[in-house]
Image 1 (cartoon, rainbow, N blue to C red):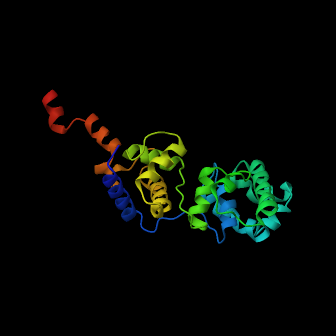
Image 2: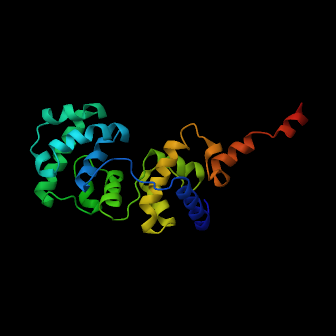
Image 3: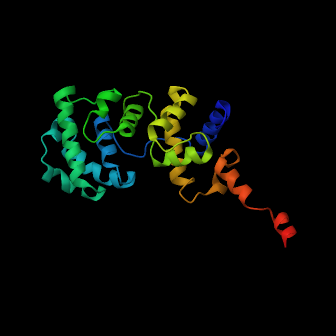
Length: 223
């Protein structure tokens, strides 16, 4: 693992490479972001952003969505995939918000993860972006990028979250997650674009790849 100073330098470099990093989901309220994040499971933010305008025009808050029937909700979210399960989660989430939180999204991890369809990653997205509570969402991009670079070790999201949070002050958590997610989407893809990466000189995976590839001089000596 890298030193705390090196890890902060890496995040500083990622900040510079991805200025203005933020969630790519469109929302205006904490409720909208919560619903959009539930819909983003096994889908893309771009796809979710296409369906949420009509969804939120019809169901702008927990009170209205709590009264929805699955057959009314499902056609609106069909293209995001797993639409039946997602409709059930959205309605259950809204009904629980109304019943237990006065229709408001609670700024509390335990209360959020008690809602249908809400895991720790979704809760952290809502906390960090809409409720101004430090949170570090860990998705597949964060797992891939952080392990490749060498700033985290493991494939358990909660353990990686704890490792990364321990290296940064809370006020940097949400943005740090956003930069890792964008880096994973744009640069450090499953097939990475290492020549475009601003942290490649700090990256463990890049270093391993360099060691595996003999230099032109070394290859000529072998011939």
